[in-house]
Length: 510
Image 1 (cartoon, rainbow, N blue to C red):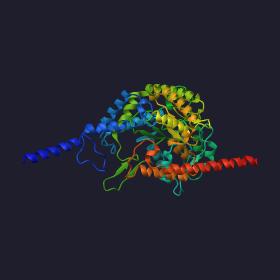
Image 2 (tube, one colour):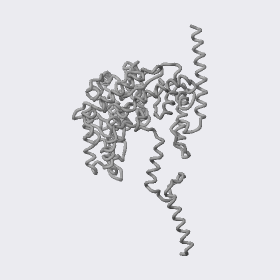
Image 3 (cartoon, rainbow, N blue to C red):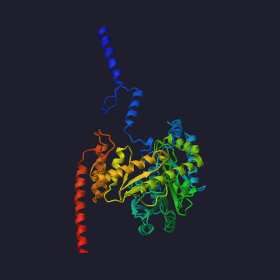
Image 4 (cartoon, rainbow, N blue to C red):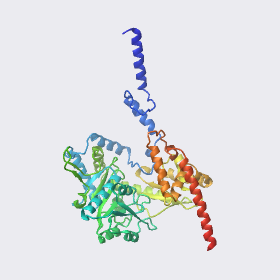
């Protein structure tokens, strides 16, 4: 090779090496050569700076952080089983042992007995999906000519039940609420019909933190010979301990006659790694309907206990490690401190003129509403997000939501200070309700044409997951253009004016 050719080759190699030191703009394909690992890790850390700051207590859901020491320990436990696939329990007997022990500990917390059984799942949604699949198949086995099956649920039931109804073709019938935001038992009783296969209660519900009357639902279930599922995904590792602390806690577990299954998330207040939850059944006569067995596959006889085929060994190992490292006394102390933070927050919010915590929250979850017609809570949320807080918004009625964890211990006072300031600004600047996320959420919550709302949200989802998606901001406007928002706001304005005119006519008639 000539000297010139050698220099040209060296120049090409240097250019390629330089490329590996800087990430090129993403073009939809794999890089020709892999990038340096340290460079990629650096890119990830840089990208992460745009995410919600949960470490400083800025989020009120999504992340359940105990402390950095516990986090490091759980990471080690997870990493020990990073590559193991629990698809085949016979191949990894240690994971089979861990699952068994986790389930037995959860059974004990939920006041089950030696006949109570269950499995670890990837999260609350899978636990709920499996419960509905189980009860549908059980009903089919018992009633050959069953018409379309249905389940009776509170209006506040977690949206995972809607997903389960959609996936498994089970009609979801919603029962209205009492003033305290628990389910109306008289309404439940009236809704039961010959196609009902399941009653559902929450302990507590996600929107307001209230607990349905599980004892009364249990009696109703027994009277009509129906199973009763208790969604305890957010409360499973909190309610047993706050009850021991002396807080007024209605009965909610297997000690209640009529309760046949419970879902509880270990990756929430069990402070385990995601994703880890359990679905528990009163006995094997229920759980057996959860299993799927294929005897004629050419790849061999296949049996699966849960929805997932591949089951990450890390999350099972980390759940076992978390529960054993924290222990009963640890969970009791965590519950005590978290309840103290929650009460301080509730008192602080109720002390702010124009805000009020609604319902009868019994745990570490609550929502608050505006009691002032001139104060828009979604405008308050926008102002809080400008201060770095990640705020969860709700509808029917419009509220702001908070799920308190031990990580808020050193941050909740700042939250209350910022909230007070946001309320003052929102009152002074009412036009904020017509801008940004406040306008979109307000339109979505108030627009009476719910089919239009659903279709518009679907369009937004299509945009978010399209091949041309190139914006990854944290607000709704980053998903696409503002045509949907503009049309929705115009429609809402028309309906609002029409409603006001109708009300004035009715007042005149009276």
